[in-house]
Image (cartoon, rainbow, N blue to C red; front, top):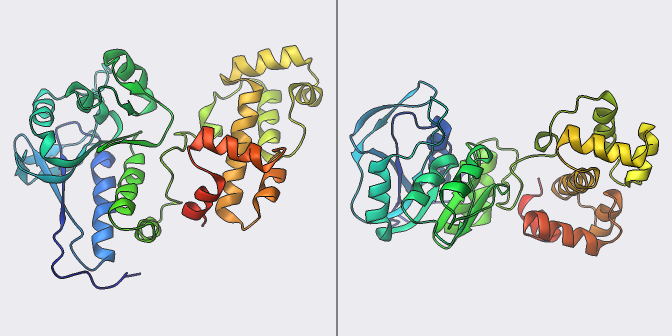
Length: 328
């Protein structure tokens, strides 16, 4: 598993993660484990991770587990700062710590790059770092981020977004995907994939991938007929999945099916079909060596060109690029 001896003269990149009471535990430990694993695999000091706080010492996370901040908020140069998030226990929304916001605003010009995990994006926005930028955050707080900071172009769908030296990512575990992307940028794709395997992650997800798989992205239908139809769509992406064909299968009129499906799932039948086909194509690209025309046919696309257009629109990449990075 080890990837060779590191240069003894290598200077570890300093990764600083500020913590505070109520912080989401995995927002902190997920990225920290990725950077740590990369260093171990290189047999060197690729990254040096520090937990810091306004007042060093024990910090109680949202899960009740304690972390220990070993240093103050630094005022000097830092390679990478990763700002984790938290949601207030009273349900009022994301935590925006004024001390951290002031620190970010005053010192970010000394940092090589700065990232937020989950609701940490609200602190970057409050510090002015997201003005005019495209950014993402946890789906739960995306609407509030857009409302509170109208100068930020909020996209609630992607796993993570890189805008210059500022990175933002979705909720909780997506912080590991963001950190893996940073490892790939700093070193290479091979190391990032090896870290993912080391940490027994299913795969390293691309930034453009949706925060939700198809089953998680829709409401649970009340109707057994709609639930069965969803399952059939996911299992048969190459079939005729037009509304009239689906209506015949469900023994409903096309108009009634469209209305019922949309009301119970929150998406139209056409949107669900497109998402299901894209997910099926991703699985084939990850798990097989089938040529693109076979993938397109098996997933219900009329042509490879349609497959390309769908991947460009939904994932921000091409099928070939996706396969090169994420084939298991």
